[in-house]
Image 1 (cartoon, rainbow, N blue to C red):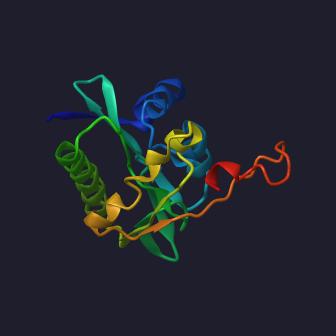
Image 2: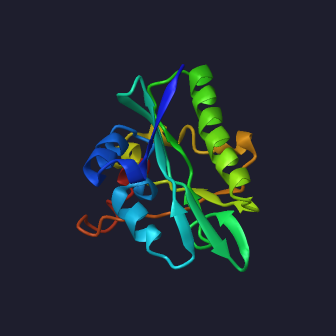
Length: 174
């Protein structure tokens, strides 16, 4: 499968967010708001975030990518804080999905080598678009980037709807 790379710097925020909205595994780490916010940090040297498109149309992966200089060393992070892991479309079967993730990390690793980055820090956030739409299968691929041997962690987040009556917030899990 051939992919087209669309860099964040080459598209407007509306187009970027429409692509990200089509990827159920995306979280706030992938939004234009978050990318713009992170670009403002003093030690962030470059925002090279990208989307991999299929046939110049359908978004397959959204990949936050920042080069920072922290403590005298270059790294792929946001001023020392983790990048969001690549968010992949759920529309692919396992084998093409692995190839897509490999392609995303090939681009990320090449960028790291070309810029003498000493490390890559990434995180996966559990509150994705799929989870917000009550799709619990959104957790299915949470640990997928471990296969690529990336420095990686998973954030734990508890979201409680304070508008619900006491005790009803977890009733569907009882």
